[in-house]
Image (cartoon, rainbow, N blue to C red):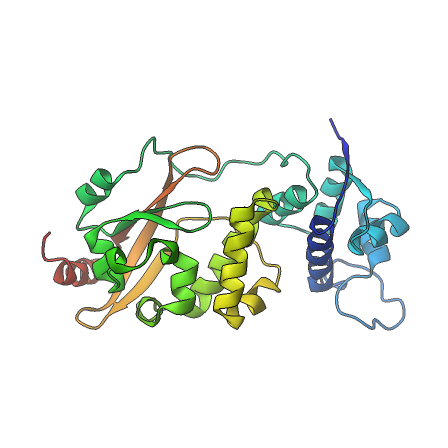
Length: 282
């Protein structure tokens, strides 16, 4: 049943900025909209979004201005459809609006009941770690340290965070071949996750820490990108073994906001040999 919620600042401001960024990213020609006059800004006009969503143009303008307006799940569904939001982006909008997340197919992933240090050690020589939704590294095995060339046991607990290490640790960053793609993706993951914890002091503290650590994070944060975690291939570089291509698989300890186990498996013979060279225990 659709319900109305009145948005409160600063959540309303974040929702407004996200909607505006999506509106400006759409090509009116691709959507088949008529060319009427000269467009002073890229993307759709607010009136066009309102027309596609069948909502009041004035109401949508207020929503995009960050005003304290009421937004029903039905209206949000229409707006996210008009803006051609992905499933992750739609969930992000609903979270910012304080509405129950829309039903959608579950991501294909297995759930793990526990993720502890014994399990991680048993996975060695496969690199593996456990992290929470804020990307704090809660556990790891020796193979993961060998892969990244960072002894996480010597890193202060408060700095054991994948995003923070990517921003501040040169060795960590140099181990990632596609770091120009990985960091933006991590920031998009964090933004999507934070929508459900916007008022949580721990999340706000983490965000402030990232902002203070690097101007690069601030620039990426302003892009308003959101993504869902998925199983991807990762390319690492080790000076002794060269490039190592690994399949990252994600396993959760709970259906929602649980700890996540990440295991990295070589995708070919060359990567298996390279990994074996830096993890001779196997």
